[in-house]
Length: 222
Image (cartoon, rainbow, N blue to C red; front, side):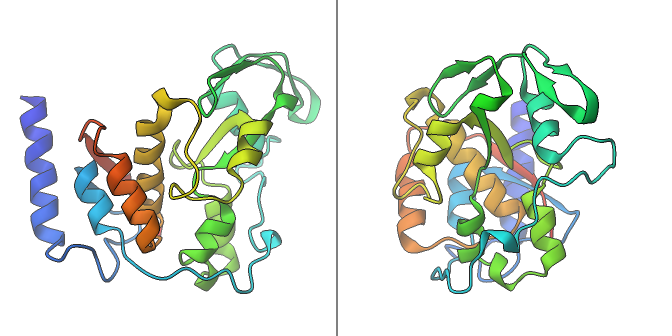
């Protein structure tokens, strides 16, 4: 029954919001929610050519402490994703603990061995629409703790291998994680209403053909 209900919800959302092969405008409003099958979500991402003109990493202020609890965004992600909780010292200094890096299937026992990756890299976000955002919106994107798919703890090596690439040129070497990676990429792009170019959409379409067609559910951040 739950499967039928989920399919009905996805179908209703799809019928109400999508007629063309892809969306030409916003998918929804900030705070609104949307769920649809992964294969359809790939289709409705708005299309646009990418441009990196004017990009600087400093345009995205990140690793802030939005709730003023003494722990930066980086530390919050490390605490949330650890399957053996780290020790927390003064000024939210973390030590010990254990994590699993899904990009390369590696277990890590020291926070210093991990990077916090933006699922959709900052440069890619800029290319896909964030270059037109306000500084406040870019800061919110760079520190997005409102959706666990936005930020992920991975080995520094795998993060630097990915760099600012999209799925057209990079996929996680840990093959068992690729469907999850593609679904999360699509979810983050939907959440922030970011565009895709032709090569990216083709890679997403081809890459998700062998994935379970489960609903992608998002709450719009903007």
